[in-house]
Length: 184
Image 1 (spheres, helix red, strand yellow):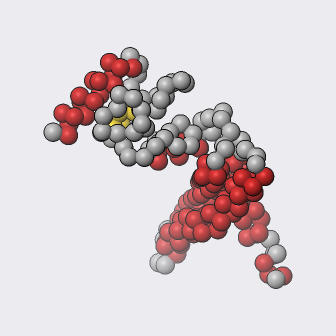
Image 2: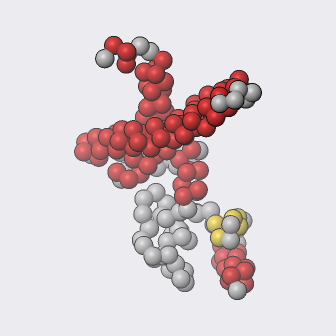
């Protein structure tokens, strides 16, 4: 029954939009054209059985994978105006830049320690720390950046979110390799 509803929804959206439709994981994803309401919004006209909740932020409700893809590709020219958008973009840049740095370090550790009896588990610890750092510390600093922008009444460009997010990772690397912590 689920496949029948899926194919029916696919046919209906194809006829409605007359454009290329991507099908991904049993959901129909239609690229949003300017001036049209987002098909994922529950308050869009002509949508039966929509999800609960209003459209929000930049382009309405979208799946988390689409949202992450938009952030990492800097896929918008719009400025980030809401606190949630600013926080989310800075946080994701901090998370993925940290994961990239820790992923490279884990790969090097795995290649060098793969034959060591206990050393082969070090890359797992490195990967875990690559996630825990941004989730614990990166969340706080991302909220601080977004809070300062919101309090000042300013909007944030997506490129600024990139600089703030990756800047957190760069500062973490500098502090880690310097002797600053040893002097405290």
